[in-house]
Image 1 (cartoon, rainbow, N blue to C red):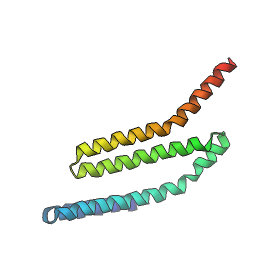
Image 2: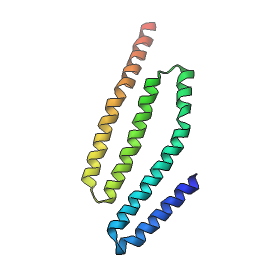
Image 3: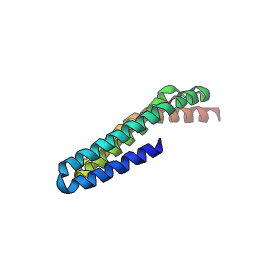
Image 4: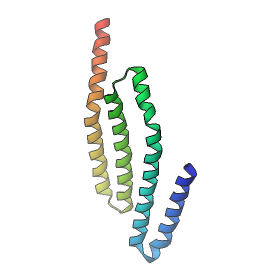
Amino acid sequence: MIFQLVGIAFITAVAAILLKETKPELSFAVSIAGGIILLLFAFDLLSDGLGIFGTVAEISGIDSVLVKALLKMVGIGYLVEFGASILHDFGQNSLADKLVFCGKAVILVLAVPIVESVLSLIVRLLELL
């Protein structure tokens, strides 16, 4: 699978470089299309491995809501980074920075249940002492 990803990335890069001189607008389109294809491959890879997190949550007794929130935060981080990279490719650095800021804000909001859970665990531990 990794060879396919590397192959797609190289083919996309070569096609974008070749098109850049003659048709720059197509060069960007090829880059975005290649990036989306890579992202879809990555999602397919990740979906196969995500089931293990549910199993780990069950075995360890961790609330599945917390595991889902954690996975959402990681997913948002990757998507924001991907989107910001595309915006950087378009020369929209300021917009990319704003997207990263918004992504961090969303992750912060999603982290609230995890922080609450950790704080309640600390309180319970302190009560035992």
